[in-house]
Image 1 (cartoon, rainbow over the protein chains, first blue to last red):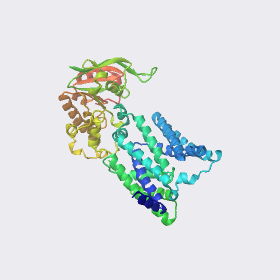
Image 2: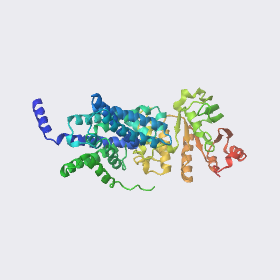
Image 3: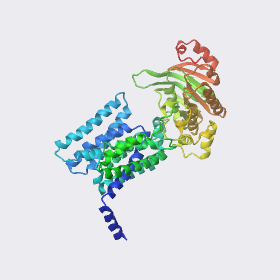
Image 4: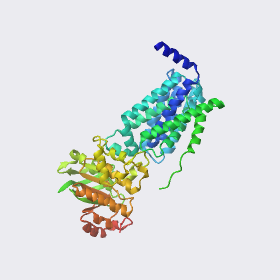
Amino acid sequence: MVAIAVVNFHQIQETWWVTPFCVILFTGILCPAMGTLLITHKRLLQVNLISHCVLPGLALAVALGVSPSLGGVFSGLLGALAAEGLTNKKNENYEAIMNTILAGSLGLGVLLIPLLGIRIDLESVLFGDLLTANLGDLLRTIISFLAFICLILFGYEKLVHIGLDPEGAAESGIKVSYLNLALGLTTALVIVSSMSAIGVILVIALLSTPALLGLQQAPSLWVAMVRSSIFGIILSALGFLLAIVFNLSPGPLVAVLCILLIALLPSKRNN
Amino acid sequence: MACLVAENLSYSYSPKGQVALDHVSFEITTGTMTALVGPNGAGKSTLLGLLKGHRKPAKGEITIDGNPLMNGQSQVALMPQRSRLNWNFPITVEGLVALGRVNYSRSTCCELEAALQRVGISSLAKRRLDSLSGGQQQRALLAKTLMKPAKIFLLDEPCSSLDPPAREDFLLIMRQIADAGASVFISSHDWGASLNAYDKVVALDKTILASGTPELVKEKLDSISCMHGSYCGG
């Protein structure tokens, strides 16, 4: 029985599109659900910072001979901590400082590649290279998916409270900074795992656009996350299909489709 | 009977900073509705934070039924200013109200229904929060506060964004809560005619300016220049 399963699995693997398709489907479920959580917590700018912070860690990891994903998650987490510190202080120049760090981190990553004498396909890191995704990429996506499920299972009510009233949540004894850190770590994992599917820069589109649609009239956060994921799956599958038909890069195509999806957003009603 | 007693409370946000509260003393009586009035920056929200135990006074003491506040903190519930909440968060009215018990115990349907009924929004239980009017949102926030097993309710400017009829309705609900035996302490910018709805008024501007019945406090306030500015309610 096991032998048949292994043979079937290898046969499936030989069909080149199965692994990339699974990666984009998981990414299509995960990113919009995560994005919904982040939008309701008003943390999209922090996400942008984390995604730009991934590259320096990735370059260092390649130079040190460790897994690039680990390096990416580590420097993404450092970005999350920097974002957390800046959010807590929240001075009037907060956005400008955040954007400077964001651009500087990307610049540092680009500079490290020649300085460390390493070879990194910058285009595939930043904009994805879905069609070459392998089982390792799929595994990374599944690990991030499990981390997200754990965050939701153990902290859903607290995350709702923090999103609704952060001060009130802290006053009622919820460890807001710990949960925000867990949120930052999960975000870093999600961004790194989306690297092959859509790239660390374009992932922001998949984090935000389906979430905006899913949030429309959703009676609760989890309903919004499920709806966002459904939009995300449709968007990802469509992007994958069109990329194959028209021989285009899937990552940028999904990002462009996100712009078209914004047209489906109802205009804000006036109260 | 005095339920909460504040004696000589002083507070400043930094050791060398300006004093936010200076020797503030007053009492909140069981089953009454007390207004805390004062201009912007008078220290109303700071005082409510001290009474809830979120901040510790630099000097002075707060007691509940003769015991230090620390021992009776769970008997005090605070309804925050509406600006603190993310009203676009995807949540229904009943979802918000249920969060009132998040750190105490799981709320039963009966408790939730009772809280919604007390504020008169049972029919809106399944509605999303951002689809409600300002007055209905305030009632939902009040229902969340009422979910806490407290006997002293502190409300931070609950009427600030309400039109006069909604304000009257809100104060009527608060009166029913006070009549049921709870102590209600409401901070407000409005020291006009609406003060008559309260049993007692405390006027604050870093220190207590006046305290007593609405008529008595209004008389005193008329003679205090700082209260004659644009904040005057009528």
